[in-house]
Length: 302
Ligand SMILES: Nc1nc2c(ncn2[C@@H]2O[C@H](COP(=O)(O)OP(=O)(O)OP(=O)(O)O)[C@@H](O)[C@H]2O)c(=O)[nH]1
Ligand SMILES: [Zn+2]
Image 1 (cartoon, rainbow, N blue to C red):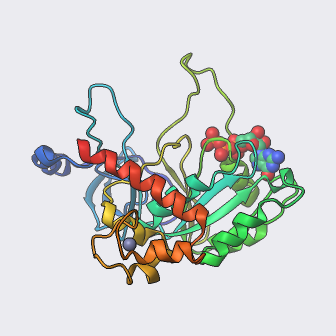
Image 2: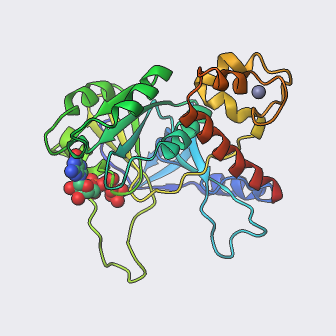
Image 3: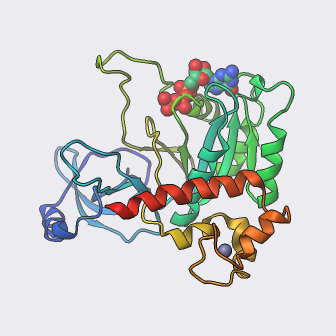
């Protein structure tokens, strides 16, 4: 995309590809250029472009690549970069259909926090929560310090607040399939025609979804990255003893842990466990933490 928001199809200069190949024995990433990268490119006569250089990233969001047949051995997982230079991660959930899942929210929060991207939470389809059962979670996340938007694309609640919040930033929308990302984007930016997911029979094996992230200029100085079909989110490259830092309300209690490699699970003198017992850390968050910790342990058996 050039400065005006016009899209130009670009190829990578062979030089960049070659440098990349040299590093192949230490291959840790799957992608060279990612959505959101700021690049220098030259325009060809036919209107295509050649990327000469990828500028240094302010941050990047990645996950473990889904297991691929043949591509990985012994369960090794590669890093897949979803997007770069993101200001805000908008974690989109629905209250129902699919049902709100706080564990999943916490995983995505960890991905954002560990990437240095500021996360916020959207709970969409609140028209399906007439008795406000969601308040428990809304209050929990707000008490930690996260912004929580309660939206409905049916009755338009929360849409203007969200739009205001996104203005003047690069915002990545992330959430499971069906939570209403595209519906929200279409409400926020009606001229832009984001695709509302329909189950397509493009291939018989199931749902056809694109995996690539797409960036669009939505307003002056405002860009949205949509991530259709990206469902599985395993944080990449987090060590067990670092995980607690990405549960940001644990921070002040981690200082009290006796061991600096404490994983806040069974260790004696753990400040986090103590805070949890005193009700200063919520059960929901602590249990999420333990569940995530376990998935990290599995990775040790590469
Ligand atoms: N009740 C209710 N339904 C909604 C709302 N927003 C979206 N939906 C419905 O939820 C379904 C999924 O919406 P999409 O916008 O396609 O969801 P998505 O997150 O983009 O899904 P993928 O494209 O698969 O990633 C559609 O049938 C929408 O009509 C809402 O606020 N309330
Ligand atoms: Zn501890």
